[in-house]
Length: 192
Image (tube, rainbow, N blue to C red; front, side, top):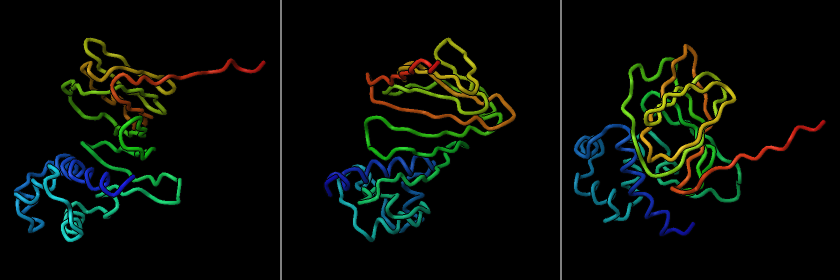
């Protein structure tokens, strides 16, 4: 990945981090000492990030600088797992390729989220494999409960939401792909 590509990706990453935390530009400006207009220009790509600004933002978000800019790792092919918590769930990225197919392990706490969530839509295609526990998948007018070993796949433009109805965490392997890119599972017959 070229330096320009890394720098261009910083703005959207900064915006996503701020929005995931439910923080406004004004709140972030207050905690970092960076003006609202500078933060807005950083997020929109209108201003290139400097080391000084990135260090202030990394401190405010309590992340390491390399996580903030998602700089490519050189020489080490291993994926370094950095669990992230969003909306009470834990996401563990299993791939580091920006765009294209992305893999995550998701851990839904017991009885999550505790209410009937509103179904959401977005671009893409999703494939789910339940590793353990149960996952209730609301998909348009369908309401399906998946258990360990079961798989679901769907176009994410279909309204969808997830619920863990169980008393134990539900662990799910999730693959997300761009619109139109379906995942295919191929299995060979068992050897006799």
